[in-house]
Image (cartoon, rainbow, N blue to C red; front, side):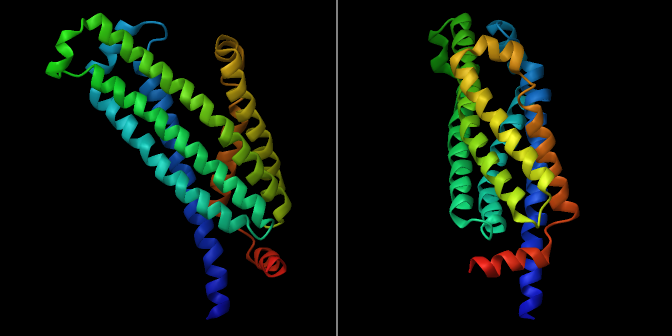
Length: 243
């Protein structure tokens, strides 16, 4: 029974992580392509406000779904630490902390989308402002969300690279996925720093190219965890050696 429990535990963790990762990927695509991409008009505060007011339910759904990804990411930080601590406990813990820091930054960024909703609402206290003023401040709030999200990717990049390195070294998960995760993490970090240094250059020339490796790597890891899980024998060997 003890041997069976040891075998079931890492596989359960792996499959759970794969499902959570899949939700995060789908939710992120939905939020970016079907919500912000559809409703936010670059450089046009009035058109953006009209779109959000006219599709408030869609905007709220996108926001709620992306907030749920924060919950998933907290759980993923714990699961990935558990799966990869046999390789190097300290690095796995550091990677988990980086992921939790990313979640903190990302969650705060979402407050600016909530602020935009409040500014475009029908509350009586907003009637002292002209509509154009509210539209401009709401658009500024959405811009602050984008900047906050970009900043959060620096921590996500370090987390992704560290987990990728541990996957590469693990021998119970594919080395190719580990290598792709390292490359993806570097891309996330470069994108984050570039956005701080030169937003126009980043949005014009670097987006979405620096983020594409991350999509490939994370989708590959997600599907592998769901379909194959981990190599139980090698995971147990590493666990015994690290004890």
